[in-house]
Amino acid sequence: MLNFRPQEKTTLVRLSNAGVRRNGRWLVRGVDFSISRGEIVTLIGPNGSGKSTTAKTAIGVLKPDEGSVERMTGLKVGYVPQRLSVDWTLPLTVERLMTLTVALKGREIEEALAATGMLHMAKAEVQHLSGGEFQRALLARAIARKPDLLVLDEPVQGVDFSGEIALYELIKQIRNRTGCGILLISHDLHIVMAETDTVVCLNGHVCCRGTPQAVSQSPEYLKLFGRRAAGALAVYSHQHDHTHLPDGRVLHADGSITESCFPGDGHHHHDDAENVHDHDPDCGCGHHTRLHGFEPPEKRDA
Amino acid sequence: MLDDFFIRALVAGVGIAMVAGPLGCFVIWRRMAYFGDTMAHSALLGVALSLLFDLNLMLSVFIVASVVSLLLLFLQKRGALSTDALLGILSHSALSIGLVIVAFMTWVRIDLIGFLFGDILAVSRGDIDIIWGGGILVIFALVYLWRPLLAATVNPELAEAEGLQPERARLFFMLLMALVIAIAMKIVGILLITSLLIIPAATARRFAASPEIMAVLASLIGALAVAGGLFGSLHWDTPSGPSIVVAALSLFVLSLLPLGRGLRAPQSLRGGQN
Image 1 (cartoon, rainbow over the protein chains, first blue to last red):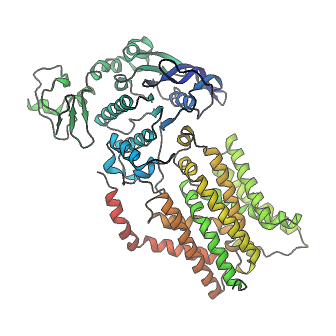
Image 2 (cartoon, helix red, strand yellow):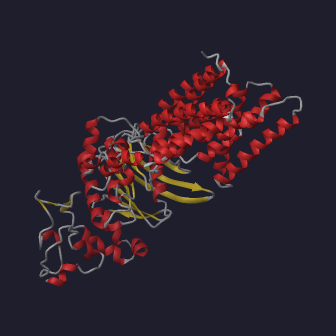
Image 3 (cartoon, chains in turn orange, green):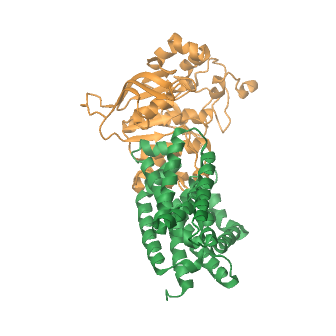
């Protein structure tokens, strides 16, 4: 671990030509990227492309077999691993989960839980949480220790589509409020891209990289995921001017909170201007299903 | 008072139950029941070597159990066989080698049943000093290691990423297991040590709201089982080890009765969705 001088933007981690080898096979090779404070870097790629390996190398869980990894001295990491299941035999409440790796003040725990909308679940056992609630609890745990670098390995797994958007919105808020660097792993490029500063597309090596827009236009990416995924990008980049609160209500960009989305809200960007419709109270906002290529059910009533 | 063999066994047994509780919780959480069994079985090899080389019995058992657990770690890293196959090989070969060595030593007569199933008559005042001294050492070590060990139980990579040292905690945990096996052998016997680790912890789970509470409850339930088992052993002239295990099992079955569920119901309501 080398010590280097802070530049105008503090570099938290820098990988230079890093590679990890297991059983005579390179899991990943030639990885170059760095993460600065306040920056979101997203790793994408198909299964087995070395995303998790790369992230673990960046935070020092794995040692690189070639190249180098430099970390800021005293770098504090908050980590949400890809797979985490708590055995039923371990009685663990959300509150107790918060202090798993470090002792915290009661106020710090409350702040982190409130930030992720999990304060009302503080006394619940983690085994009773739904997929989305569990991911929020893990995120709360990771941010409670005020890390310099937040590493999230597929944080939206097991979360439904609207929950997924809400989680990404939350991650963005965390970045904006705390100024930490974020290393995000996703198989789902078209959502992440709207928030991320740099996308690194891995497939055993760095396949392509750049700002979200640039990657979706690169031929390598199109070859990997197809045109449909790339096309979805433009739609997604418009949609984050409202947030789904954990209780099902909707927080709009102007700060107002409603029970559900307004019919014909501008931010829906429905291509069909005549498609004025009402939403179900449990919302989902029509466009969520539209993105998957389904007709919103309410259209039949129009 | 300690002159009475029964009081000595009780004091020693309660001392063991105190350390077996929290350690047993980790055995359950980490799914290491068979691993504990393997280390315990290797204790007989320790007994044989102590007779052969005229070593202190507990020291010899501790060393053999530690070596077996380190050997397992090494073989696991090489990854040729699955862990449970390795455990099966180590467990029964260590036990068998011990039995064979003992059979060769025709000049010593040992009470094999006593070693395998526990013997309350065998507890001396010196044993009590070692059990309580060693027990207090184990408790202090566990308190010190608690956070890294618990974090590594939930997820070793998370613990490592956030600056704890899960590998070191794991190593110390194995040494603590070896120590507890060495000091518990005389009371519950080699074949039954893991049940004193596991059954009280499993009983405690239903009533525990946090890992710490579960550890303390497991200690208390274990102490209760030891007391009940020893009284039964004295009364019906049964071997102490199996009697303690039967007492522990009775407490476990009691905890499954509706009384236990009644205590748990409000908690699961609170823990329910939304």
